[in-house]
Amino acid sequence: MSEISIIAASTVTAADLPLARLGQRFGRLDQQSQLALLAVASLNVNFDELAGDRIGICLAASAGSLSTDVNFWNGRDRVGGPSPTLFAYTLPSAAVGEVAIHFRLTGPNLCFVGDDQVILPEAADLLRRGGAEACVCIFCEVVTPECGRVISAPPVAAAHALFLKNRGEGIRTLREFDRDMKALCALIFQTKSAG
Amino acid sequence: MQISTHELKSKIIESLKLQDITPEQIDDDAPLFGTGLGLDSIDALELVVLLEKEYGIVIKDIEEGRPAFRSVRTLADFIAAKRPQ
Image 1 (cartoon, one colour):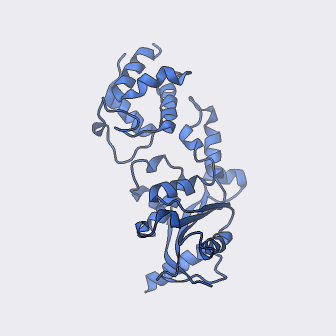
Image 2 (cartoon, each protein chain N blue to C red):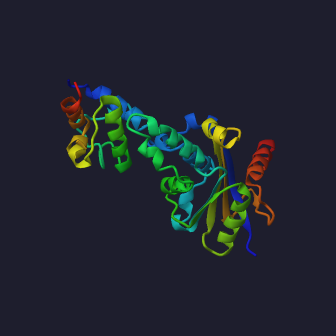
Image 3 (cartoon, rainbow over the protein chains, first blue to last red):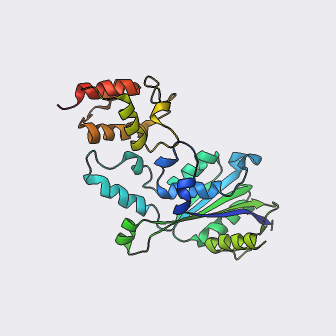
């Protein structure tokens, strides 16, 4: 079985967004797409070293696009109606599209609604099957206060990203039972900070 | 009543959440779409909402508004002509 390496890891929160400089159109993205884009940018990976169509994207969104759905719904009584721009983000996979466009990644992509346990096995499967040479894995946790009131969940705004590569030299090898992407990102951050 | 292009540009920047751009950097006569400011079809819908929200102008037929969306100056002229008194 070929070895898969973790090349880079990152975690960002809403507190990091005001400092993000990711182009003139960054402001129009919903918070989930902004966090996903910033988490991938924070990997500091030069994606141009591989062909764009050989880099896949696997994303999981803990609450789908529910926060943006609620925001859009709340705009229905405003003069002129809800924001048309916001409508484009009432799909959980919108963040995948924004990452793909920004970094010109045209490989296979997957989007899950739920926790982060499925991302790494799916990404590893994609790489082992030869569907891609590398994969950007993203886990988004976005629950705005308005959405939190609807689903009785605490507000959260964070994104975690890992860059995996077949046989690459990286931080460490992806193990068969690595599932908890959020914990893995935290562990890598702690290890790097201690080193 | 004519509105200032500077005011309109400020509202466009705010409405479209454009980053790192000031009203002074937008040419009054530059195309809003494609080249120039580089807006797209979703931005066009957002501008339609802006016109209704800020100036009380409802565009029912997008073809009617198409010439108005050529530049900031044509949009300012359109608002001046259509704005309810």
